[in-house]
Image (cartoon, rainbow, N blue to C red; front, side, top):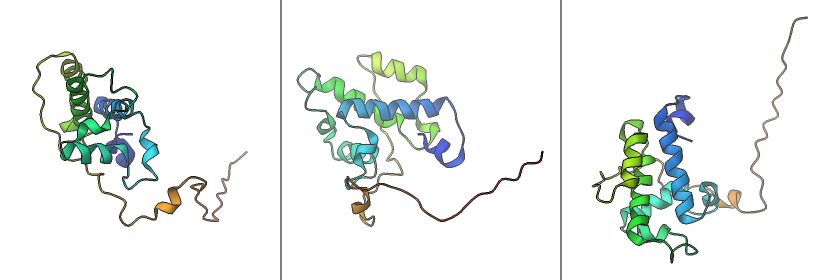
Length: 149
């Protein structure tokens, strides 16, 4: 879910671009975004950013598809995905430019900015997110709605 929609309820065409970027990363690495709950990373985006920033983005590639995937194409897709998951919609590509980036052989792509939500789980108790634990909220609050007849 795009940050502007999650935080402020604002939705635009660029929100779809964000979602496409997350989906593209999920396809490349063969893991869901939510599968990172029990790791030191908050999301797939934070893991991808770490590898991207260290020049090791190719390590995102799912080993099951590595033999059939040209490295330069995979790196281009990761680059495009990192552009799509920028926090601000202003920095994300439009749908038209996104298609051009993916179809073109020799497009020079802008460098992505670091997404805000890329910190690691240093202070969060990861035991809450391990298998076998349900994430529930219990606050003993009841809501009563009065409706007239």
